[in-house]
Image 1 (cartoon, rainbow, N blue to C red):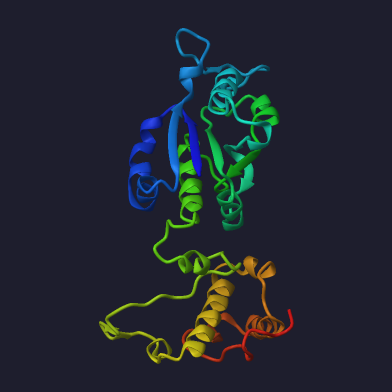
Image 2: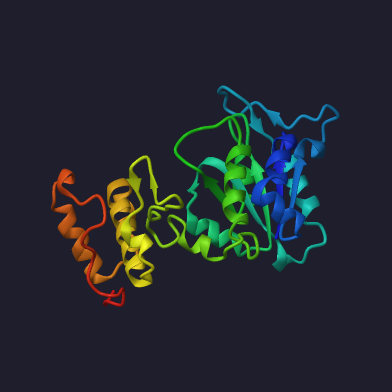
Length: 266
């Protein structure tokens, strides 16, 4: 995969692109990463990339010419069908999710546009960007940090990036639920013990416990996710019984799990 980022601050990406899983993926040739200063594509001798908004108002707006010129330079010579997704990071965009990360990870080339000031000229949205993405209902100084978040989520899904390919499949949100609790050695720390089921070696019991814990954690912390999660009929009934129980009376540790082996009618 190739990822290009159009930014006024390419130096912000030096550490991110060279460290941790992203840095290793880059070293191994799994992903090509480039931060491009779109000020270099300004037609002004002063490198101007913004101007006052038509109609008045506070702040400045990014001009369309440098962004169009930068994208056209990056895609020069590409056949029409091979044109990359051009992603504008902005507060008005689609909220980023794990599903969107998986969708983008299937692409061969992504271009990110990092907005600044009061935003970008609307013609960039209408005629250049293929996607608009937001990482949440809040406003940051620019699109650089959101772009880093999306790039990290996408790159870790590329084949060969994670040491254990099953890790991504078990992440929170991958199956519509929050991830189950994780434990490692020691089996007891300051009197806090690892649940016995995880020490049992009984893989079917462990799988049931983990599924149950994912359901419970999602119910407590993100109940909105349950509406779209892929659940069995028995799991939905079990959750309905729990939801009818006062929160203080709901089980907190190893407890009753939905019956069945996960093959119930959906």
